Length: 493
Image (tube, rainbow, N blue to C red):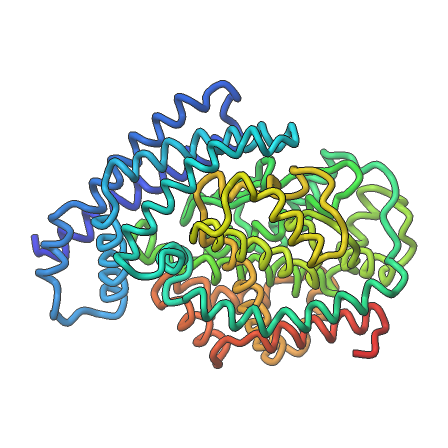
């Protein structure tokens, strides 16, 4: 066998084991008995040890060296690029550290869930300190003398730096603050009233998932505390949650995760279990979940369709017209939870986390001071006080599992979604007519063909640039938000 053949075969096995590890994580969040966390932590650590050994195997370096300088087709070149990036990362991180991170974060996730349920940040702080110390050590190894946070960010958004994000987010922030201020001076939208049966919620959620193209023959929908998506190719799992007083929580969490799930299901099957057989980055991934959830799912046209489904499923819930319903879906009001935030305020939640985690990684913010720092920043940004930890610094799972550098990709995904939607609507002027009857086929087909099927064939910004025909910018997102909410709230912006 040639070096290339041996390398790709070896990598395919590594990719398969990585999917097994992901499935264990999915099970931990959905099906695993509550008393199993200690054993699961040991299992995850053992598997991570195997994966790290494979990813840092000296033979990978030898095979890559043997392939260097040879002429290969575009797909093979992309696979070699991704394998090389993963290998160079893996050899910088000692095996003991990879296992320690896997074991500690598995345990920390359970402690986070318990602390969140009890509104007790002090109970979670010690284990968060352990996670932070391990991730900082990992970041220093990866940075090799460079910026530690940038090294962490590269795991989720290759080719992007914190300074670039600062510039982009800095351009976003003033417009968002001004828009939020104008809206909150207006009367609030009407709220849904009544009890919304969980069984009906989950049935409608399943119908919506299929409406957006999620293939249940190769996927599942389950419940979890924090909705998420995992898997790729022929085995993709998403989760949602229910609230008896707020079915939007279920429906839009589902549509959001369907965006992630469809991206993975729609990658070219030829790339399955290869280094390019998944999304290009977390920012690009988030662009899919956000355009599904917001630009499509919260549009005036699609909410007409959803209004009919909800009336059929729940009867009267206090909203008399499709126009009132559209305003309720897009209501802007005070709130604490990032995943439940409206489109206008969502990015402000993300920027808070971005700044705080950078400060923790830099050592400028100590874990024991995180809750007060969070509360102070929230009050400054939103103008009111956080009542409890579960609605503040304990609301997200990310830091418990070591995902430092992940949060900014949410806002980057929103920026990308704004660019994609601008292009989509320019190419499909009849989009609203389709959405009004629940027909997402043309919209999702364009996303599949222009972006999703390529997986990680291209680098993140190249992926967006090729789909949109222009370099990504925050301007389309701001224009979309200003147009939409000026219309909704009769603003003078």
